[in-house]
Amino acid sequence: MEKFIKNIDGCIDSMTELNKAWKNTDWNQYDEDQFEKITENYPFHKDLAEIIQDLIKWKEKIKE
Image 1 (cartoon, rainbow, N blue to C red):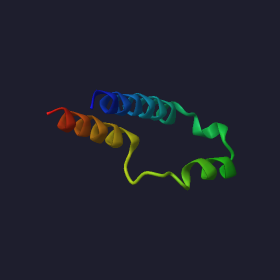
Image 2 (spheres, rainbow, N blue to C red):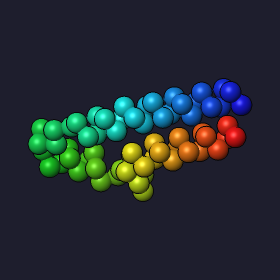
Image 3 (cartoon, rainbow, N blue to C red):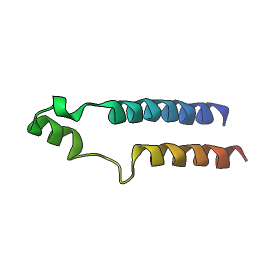
Image 4 (cartoon, one colour):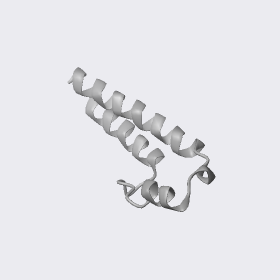
């Protein structure tokens, strides 16, 4: 179980870095086509911050 929880922690860390990059991106540096490529197929139905919180809650439930 410990290895699985460490994997969730790794996912949380990676998603946190992706969220920081997403929030700190100067979207004006991309032309319209590049912007669309990045945003049109966003693979989640939630904001990254919400996904991170869900992962944290899931990990805590597993650890109970």
